[in-house]
Length: 186
Image 1 (cartoon, rainbow, N blue to C red):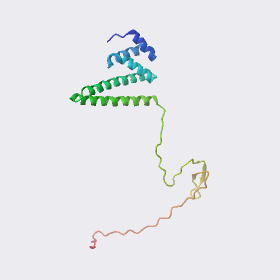
Image 2 (tube, rainbow, N blue to C red; image 1 turned 60 degrees about the vertical axis):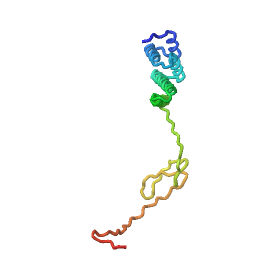
Image 3 (cartoon, helix red, strand yellow; image 1 turned 90 degrees about the horizontal axis):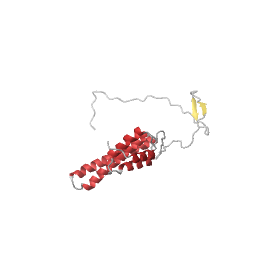
Image 4 (cartoon, one colour; image 1 turned 180 degrees about the horizontal axis):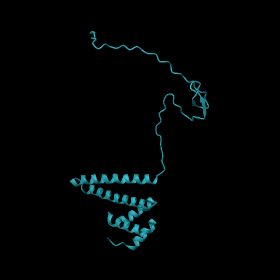
């Protein structure tokens, strides 16, 4: 385990508003070990954490993972440029793509966790067909239909529509073909 610079450690604690050494000590060590910028990664991660304004320890851990994922993505993006025309370029492109997708997924999850309980529905297209009612409809008047004595909901601003009874069904003769009957050629 690399020794921690005390002033850097205190500075991180103050900038993040974390006073629990049991949390910040391993976090700081993980940042040092995951640093992909030759020492500047810790400051980068702390700046990212401050900018995201995490509300609790779990959000801090999530932001740190995002920072490390970004470091790894940038490392492989550099490899893409360095290894132009080699077999390693294809591997670097594939890895960078996967890491970038992971970072994007982490960002979406972070935003969803932040918006927990807040749901927004946007209607982009509404199709209105024939007979549709567009506008406010009040359903505060109960009437009994003349035929069924059942309560019916009606629009208080309009007279009730008459109920059309179903016509009596009349049987329709069906012609059936005999089993052994042959068709005549046409």
